[in-house]
Length: 151
Image (cartoon, rainbow, N blue to C red; front, side):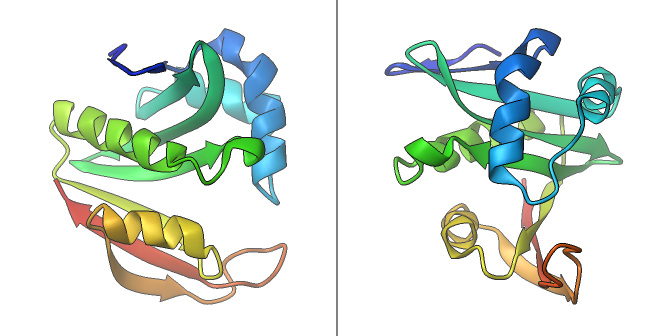
């Protein structure tokens, strides 16, 4: 991996990325992960995380666990100052390509019911709603929409 499109590069997330990753995670999620959680994730045998760089600057990250042919998206975030530039779409395309390269049969994810920009991106990329988890998000009680896509 290390694919380049225009000024955008995708590469695996590294431990040294925690310097920019932790603040971006904290600015993107109501329940950010701790440094220890991130260290465990980056070293996990099931984990596959990537960074999206634009002209060498980190602008997004995402990753999934690969278990029994299912790529379960664990995290996907775009720098709040860069949202609306289709960076999430570029990142998701790279994540799908990586899951396919690893012989995953499907990709699944959970998204907040009210996160309409993300849901539109997932719809655009062929994900379909396959269930709900009422009250899933502890900070708001919001439902999670479960989505999946065959690879």
